[in-house]
Image (cartoon, rainbow, N blue to C red; front, side, top):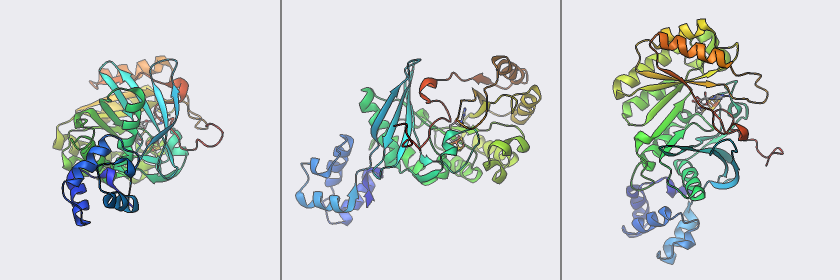
Length: 343
Ligand code: SAH
Ligand code: SF4
């Protein structure tokens, strides 16, 4: 079946004309897609023959909201979305002074197995298509009744383990054929798939890049992030340098502060040494609770000491405010095994 919602206008036009329909039909179809048509039969200005063809050969990807959890601590909302084949992903809508930001998922689960992450613990089932990433944004917009201005690919999944669909998503969502959200308002987060960081750099897109670092040495990083055994820190840093050189953009490093794991003064100094001279920012996230992970947040005192050491070495660092903690909507808390009693 053809995923027409992942196509831009030119592709849709080719698809329809190759199958014997008039060129102008693609604009009509696209206009229905933009109006969130849920069924080909809703596309009332299309001839019956075209509707039948689409019903037989294409499908309308979706991310239907099946559960909404609203935080009582802030304006954060967590959605559970159902995809066309009955798989589920989660997304989180956050309200900032500059507008609404949505954190969307790029895969059902994740293969990377980071030990501090609920998604990593929930296994992997499949990657999402571009249309399914866009559908999460649209469903949330309809639910909240406002335009969403910023998107982060920091939900479930490793975006660079689903590279082609993610790049298609970026190009489509930022175009007039779709939601027209500027690349500068989109950020991708990766655990460090080195060859894809280089490919991404070569594309020269203006979208933001975050790298989940979480430890400054191979020994420590491999302990919590299995991906480090495949792509060790030296290779990762080389790829990040290449990205900065190619795009001239600042990179954000994500660093979850875990009590007695990666939060010592010595570790802070090692991190400062690693990042010295790089155009970057360090986002420190007191590690969020994940059942069975056995990690605790660093104390406020350690968080402060860590920031102070980085600052003393001239590294730009901030501790990130945690949103939606009462609804398990914070970084690393999204998971795919919802059916087991919690729906
Ligand atoms: N797979 C991508 C994007 C999704 S995870 C990646 O790993 O970058 C989004 C962010 O949440 C990443 O920076 C990830 O390292 C972080 N994260 C995962 N589990 C966390 C936890 N328990 N506490 C804080 N941050 C966590
Ligand atoms: Fe996957 Fe990112 Fe979680 Fe690691 S932190 S398991 S890469 S989603």
